[in-house]
Length: 100
Length: 100
DNA sequence: TAGTAATATATGAATATATATATATTGAGA
DNA sequence: TCTCAATATATATATATTCATATATTACTA
Image (cartoon, rainbow over all chains, first blue to last red; front, side):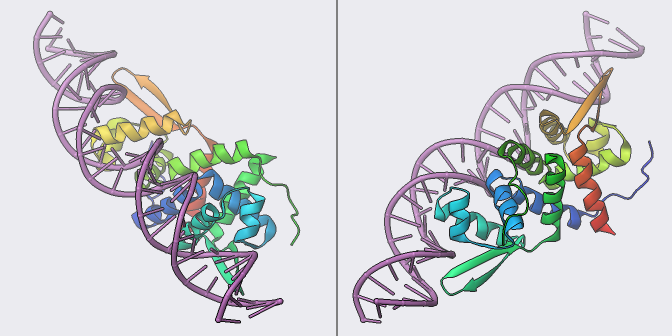
C-alpha cells in the first residue's frame, strides 16, 4: 500500500510522546480526570479525594506541570492546579467516550 | 465547582494508562504512524524505513502487540504487523490534526 | 514571633525500561 | 540437507521511574 500522507515530523512525535508518556500513569490520569471535573483544585483536595499521600500528589502535580500539562495558581498558602494543555483535555474526552 | 460528571472508573483508567504509556515513546509512535500509512508492514520494512536495528524494531513491535495495540500475520518467513486498536488510531488522528 | 497548615523537596530503595549485542529459531529454496 | 534471510529471544548494562519517608519552606494567624 502506498503512503497517502506524510510521516509525522520527529519534533512533533517527540513532543507528543512526552505528553502521552506522562499521561500514561493511572494516578496522573486520575488527577487529570479530577481536575477536569473540578476546574481547579488544591494539592490537599487532590490528595484527599484520590487517597494518596500529600507528597506523592505533589510530586505528580509538579511532574505534570513541568511538562506543561498543568498550570498552577497560588493563593496564600494554597496552590491551585488546573489543566493547561488542550491535548490533555482531548485525551480525557476520548477516555470519557470510551466510558460510555 | 461541582463535579458535573462521574469520575472515570479505575479499570478504564488503568487500561488507558497502559496504552498511553506504550504510545508515549518516540519510536513506537513513529512505528504506529508508519503502520497507519502503510496499512501493514514487515519487521524488515519497518526497521529499514525508520532506520533502527532489526532487534530493536522487533522488541518494540512485540511490546505493542502484547498490549493489543498491534496485530500480526505471518506469511512464510515474513511477519506483517498492523494496527489493531481503535484507541491507537484515535491518538494518531489527534496528532495528525496537530501537525496541520 | 511562635505555631500551624499547606506545599515542596531531598533522598534512598525497589522496580521498570531502553538499548545493544549476540545468538537462536523458523521457513524457503538450491 | 545446507544455506540464507527474516524474525525472535536472551542477556547485560545503563538509565529512568515510582513510591515512601523524612524534612524543609512558605504564608497565615494568634
